[in-house]
Length: 267
Image 1: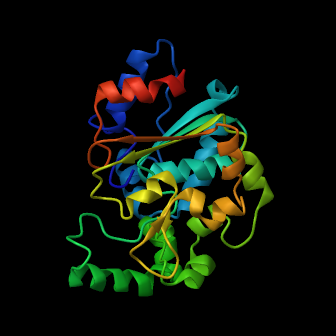
Image 2 (image 1 turned 30 degrees about the vertical axis):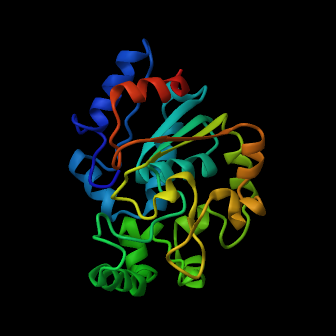
């Protein structure tokens, strides 16, 4: 997740320990992007996401313990990055994908930006809008790679290096569609008081309706779902989509909640 590393004992590190403590004999691999914890943290902000995804695919393929398949858990931006892994790298097979506060339709807003009417928010938004889809920013600012501007849909579809690709915005890549449907379960967790992710609907694969920045639509109301460009409608029919919500701000959950709701998907 943004600003974190694989091995931070207070976050990813403690989750790893908790899972290991709850499920005896489980093997948990924390993915490190780069050669050190510092690099890993920096890469969460500045490294081309497509490169990060292929690094992870290599790491998974080279791990003999994962040959038979694995469950994947992504926190925040890790949610959509691991979905890309599922879509692009079916071997070894990902069984369950658990996205915790992931932004599957991207973001259009600023963390903890005060109030929708604030002129500052709009000013910064405009700056990101004018720059987010330039090659330089796309390649070097991770957050721009899932910046989704509903007011400039054509620009987004054309220039978004990562999100528009994995969300089938330019063309339908049948392989992506086929691979995602190999999942047993795709679990999406939404935080009901999230002040970091805008709009929060993206955590359940919803987003702002195209052409404006006020009204949102659910996944089920979207073109992506109606045309089933990614196989999500078929997955929902098959009972593979799980929508969970929890009280609290971004990534704020209790150990009890985690144990009750998410651990079952890791067995």
